[in-house]
Image (cartoon, rainbow, N blue to C red; front, side):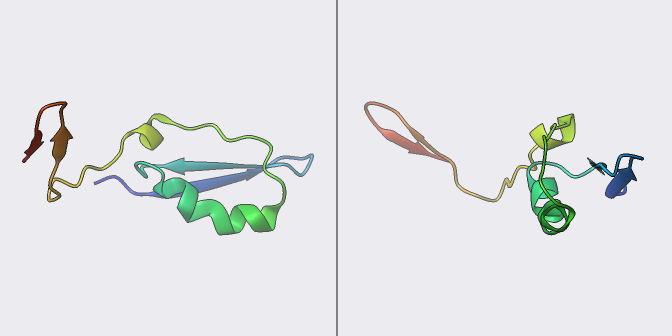
Length: 73
């Protein structure tokens, strides 16, 4: 498992860049929301490939709805 990392870069103009590494899905947004509020207005957010890699919970039932019947796995 890779180490979860948050990197902050403070530029000379005072703007802060935040980068989150090795955190799948939208967990990164939840992890950083408190510090983002304290830092000020968010100008933009760019999502990395990690954001789109959702961890799957394979213990939940999956239901597929079709026009004729419901199929549950």
